[in-house]
Image (tube, rainbow, N blue to C red; front, top):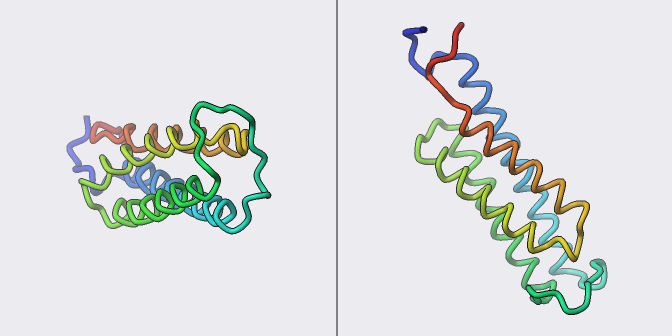
Length: 133
C-alpha cells in the first residue's frame, strides 16, 4: 500500500479532473439544450399524452438551471473542494433524472447525456487513496 496522501496521487488527481471536466461538458450541453427549448418551442418534437407533461419552456428552464449548477460544481471540484465531490454525484443524479424525463422530446441526446452522467458518477466514486504508484 502506498503511504502517499490523495493530494499527491496522480491517479486520484487524474480521475478527479476527468470527472470535473465531464461535469462541465454536461453542464454546457444542458445550458444549450435549455436555451434551445426556451427560445424556440417548435424545434423539439413532443409525444402525445406523456405522463410528465411540462411544456418545453419549463423544461428549458430546468435544463438551464441544472447546467449552471453543473458548471459551478465542476469548478468547485477542480479547486479541490471535498464537499463538491458529493455535490457532483448528487447533481449528476439529478441530471440523469431530468434527462430521463426529457426522453420524449430529444431521445438520442438525452441518452448520451445520461451516459455521460453515469461516467461522471463512476469517476467521482472511483477515488481512493489506495492507488499503487
